[in-house]
Length: 80
Image (cartoon, rainbow, N blue to C red; front, side):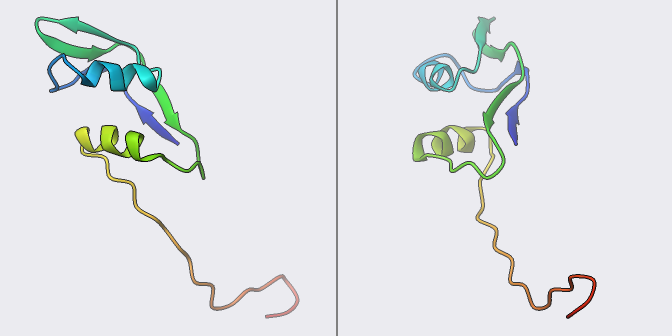
């Protein structure tokens, strides 16, 4: 799961507000700064993330990485 937590962010109001709204991230502007008003789930486990969300996450210094596992051995309780 990927959750954007509530609280102030360093980004200033502008086009980023539209990007945040697209992913249902509730915001308000206080003293010229954006504040996220509630925690928001933006991606579920195993969900593919589109390029627009990747771009938005990079503004929060969040970088998705692909993860692969190479199984060498499987043990089912009886056989190896």
